[in-house]
Length: 221
Image 1 (cartoon, helix red, strand yellow):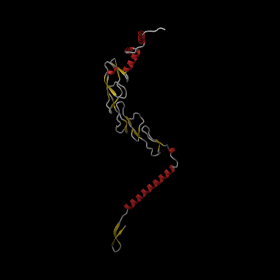
Image 2 (cartoon, helix red, strand yellow; image 1 turned 30 degrees about the vertical axis):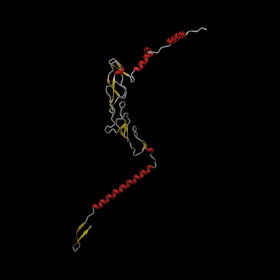
Image 3 (spheres, helix red, strand yellow; image 1 turned 180 degrees about the vertical axis):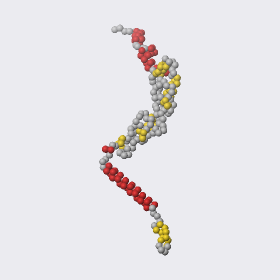
Image 4 (cartoon, one colour; image 1 turned 180 degrees about the horizontal axis):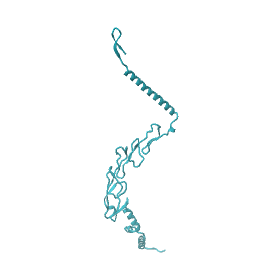
């Protein structure tokens, strides 16, 4: 059996260590390292090209204030004014959009969601009004169906659906007709009585004069 000295063991261990794959800064120049670097430097919200340079877009809710010069991330962005302006997607715009107002005269709108730097105002119809378009500019009053009655109630995006005449209970119709006749007769009688009363009062006269052989003063009505 062959024995090795301690020095031989040290050299063997040194050779084994040298044979192991090394992970050092050189890996950043390998294809995998370049992929990692590109991912880190990639624009989070996308990019755009200007004057032959590729710059990162500003995030939603921001506007561009300075183009990039060397690196894509060198561009400068600022936030839109809260409650007044917005940009709802990544962009390279130098301005923000104005928030929509829900208080236009006779539009019958109210605020559903307030405007933010990244989202425009959301409006909806007031109670008793509806609108069929999206986004809604003006709302119309809901139908009240006073004659036939409501089948489906009005919503902010749909008008009231009234019952059809065939859906009105048949027993109600005779009662309605009789009630109409009685009401018309009562109104006619009231007018006739009023006219008679007025005529009786207006044509009531007094006859004043002398009558009889004795010449006495008498008054006839």
